[in-house]
Image 1: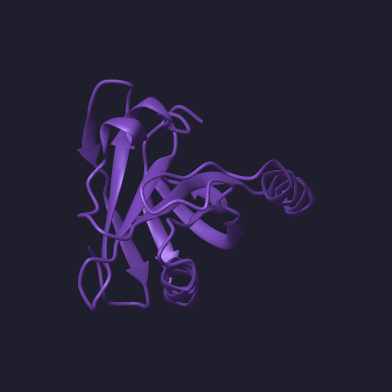
Image 2 (image 1 turned 90 degrees about the horizontal axis):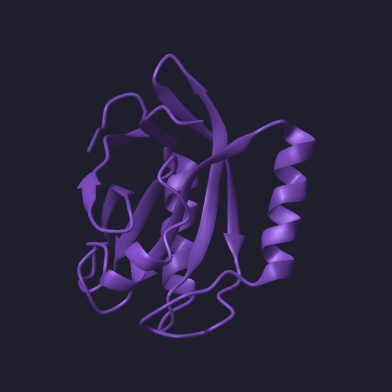
Length: 146
């Protein structure tokens, strides 16, 4: 999938992602949002929380067994990775140099959950090895968009 798209996340899966991020504090969390792309919109239908093998507040690495389980489930459902997400417990949801170096790929949205304040600050990004630009996305509850 080389085409860029607008990411649409159902409210319940968005909330599950935020709960995952808060549950892993003080460490960063990581996970996958999967679904399919139709007419320029990536519709998320599945949420796969992964284990952060580093258990670190400043970086993450997806633990291989949790990643394998997510990939098996996606194959079984016929879905594809639309976005990867992780949290920044102590900083803004802007890609770090390490995020750019370790990015999953240029064809998926990289969602970062900032947890510096009481309310999560969530932003989506298209990453390359050298730079990033903000991705279009929305919470699908019929009205809200970001």
